[in-house]
Image (cartoon, rainbow, N blue to C red; front, side, top):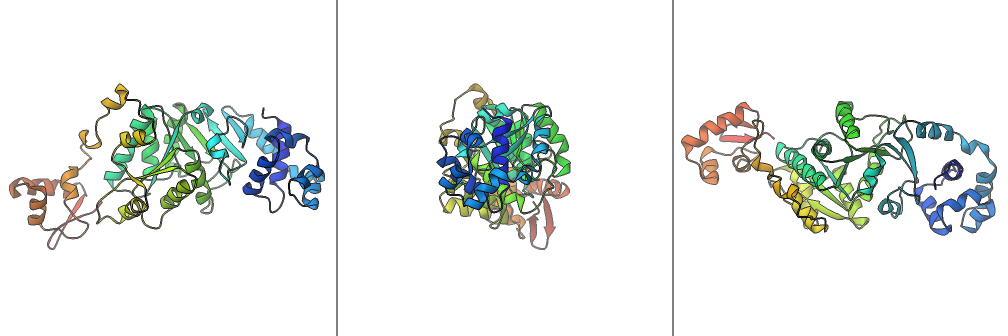
Length: 367
């Protein structure tokens, strides 16, 4: 049971200089249980490998309690609280990772952590193909009772959260305080998430502003919470690839969405596939690989991504035949097997919508 005394004991320990999550998790493994720290002495910590000065300071220095009152104030707000590693409902999968955050601040429906979780990450500036795929895939996964996890960033993260909230719940892990919405344009999305059983998580204290150094730290939580991580478009040097490699180190499955070889945002996914990630085409592929395929009517009724065309969605087959460099009309006609008199009106429509640009030698894809 999580008590104020237990939280304070771990809080004081976390405030010792030079003591990070790895050291705190090592201590968790040496103690009989997490609650044992409430009654521990300086000698107990020394026996567990702490230096005598550090152990004595933990026992005696009241300045280590500074800031704890703000944690308690957070816990007194509706649907807000703190999770302590090793104490339910802190997720066991995350708790087992070597650098699991000792504290997780939450806002929303904590029961979301009881669901199997799958993470989805990718480019902040994805192509419409990847964004639409991520939205649809997340919608299908959430309809199957999966908690879709992502980082609330622009692009694929946002698409995944949007898709999941349409049919189930989603979990956002932040690189700032759980009360700080970043980016601000996702304020409406956060409201929808929280009103549909979603959850916000952060290892950073409320009020903490977003900082670049926080995001790699956030990524390990995204992967640590999840059974697998799906990457939908990523450049060769990107945070999404960092998340995927963290997932592999944590023993999670890694899935990658293939794309056009001429699209630089597909190179990261193709590299992951070469390194052993599973090529994924649909949510069903993910569910089957993870043993979560329930064969429910809801899954069967979900249309394929390109079975539900909208006015804003380009003909995917035609788009796939046009390169990011100049592609002649004759080449497009041969690839698409469309007569030129049918092809030209479609190319014009795509150009008007901003998907293509007419250039010397033909057309080139813009997104």
